[in-house]
Length: 99
Image (cartoon, rainbow, N blue to C red):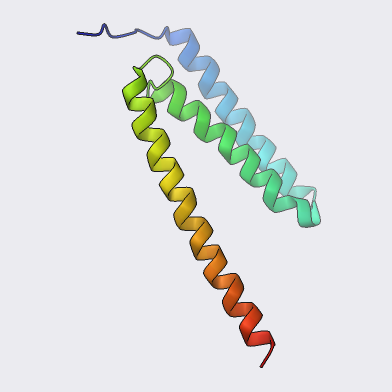
């Protein structure tokens, strides 16, 4: 039986402060009007925030490998779903523009 890892309250506060700082960074980037870079920058910030939540608040950082593999396989299937959906939409736009 695996032991439960206790994360210090100070770590939770640091992660929460980082999440708040990243939220402010998102707002600042929005106000800068980055043009075509706005989307990728926003997604990058969101990915960092999601990673912090997954690692610390959902305890994946200190969890066993089985749970990491389960989460990773779910993420891979999500990316496949998004990729196939984007491919479907892209091919429909391409075929409609030739009409």
